[in-house]
Image (cartoon, rainbow, N blue to C red):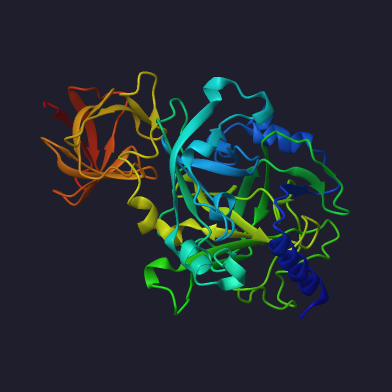
Amino acid sequence: MNKWVYCSLVIYFFLLVRGDCSRRIGKLNSQSWESHKDFGRNATFFSPSVDYPDLSAVGLLESSKGIIGTATLIAPNIFVTAAHVVRNSLADPLPQGSDWQFILAEDFDQANESQIFKISKFEIHPGWTVRQTDGFNEGMGDGDRIGVDLCLGFLESGIEGIYPLSLPSSQLESVGDRVVIAGFGTQVDGVDGFFSSNNSQRLAGENIVDRVVEKVIISSLPEEYWGGLLAVDFDSPQKDANLLGSNYEPVDYLGTGDSDPSPLALEVSTAVGDSGGPAMMFLDGQWKINGVVSYGTNFSLYGDITVFTRLASHSTWIQQFLPAWPEAKILQGGDWRQLQWFGIFLPFESGWIFHAQLGWFYASTRTASSIWLWQKEQGWIWVSSFSFPYFYSFNTNDWLYLDMESSNSRQHKVFSYSSKSWALYSNEF
């Protein structure tokens, strides 16, 4: 085994044994922290776009005992984090919501009462609990290495005015894709690990996906508990710290492969720190949370490896807890919702929705990234965040274009690509 990887793994094992809870975010030593702070609060040219996600859903999870991690809203009343943040060992008691709080602020030391939210309960991934109960690593378990380091937190009430991050689809991530990482960690540079321990601000940066493991097959676990992993390494400006490159031995369950040794402009690492922080990727026309920080093999120095629990590997488990329209922002008052791509609408328990501009539809699916809608004259139509305002008509096997400027709650102006003609459709309830 390469000596750098060996040393890193020894350090990692030592940290696990002694329960180190340090939070670290490492950056290129050639960069200042100002850009990462601006990125973390979507300031200056880091405003939400196809290049930069909206980070307002990324917050701090804090216990009454001072344990800290990062967590991200995936529904107005649900956040996702790493299981080890709330229960690192079998010896730890089961987490109680009343002992924790979720802080949704750019700087958690400056948060006001309206940015601090009460937690009702936690739901830890069953695979994480099984591996602790089975006695692996003296009750610490190995859930981080096998990709089941996952926990959901449930708030006492939904948060208004914030877009939750979208969950990934079944699309497999690709090595070489850009990933944005954000969270609350101690500031470290990649050369010597010098850090500032008093950071309370949300920081953000970028990296390149170097490993994608769709399933970690563990024969002693039920298949529905199998996890997945994403991983990045922390490349140096000298291009000499490429520990996920093809000339190094595999680490844990990450398998073999290669890695580009060149760092991005705002390259960061979160190894041994920022537990539970999101790994975000722009896929299908949306920023999605594809992973949460689970563990790393160093101290956020050049050459470290950060490993994320892959969320798409657990989509079935996560979906069972989600409310209708999880990605929709709750508008002031609590009844109306807004999707970034679909607009403002009022949902009803029956499945009917009233769109503020387009009027009445029946929605058979409510995942919000793609929707089957029924309308009296058009029948069943399908639309997604990637296609809107283009719709697919199930009745006519045709793609339709909805002219938003000429449509309203009573009438829709639609172009048919099969007939190459425009038509007006009444939208009576």
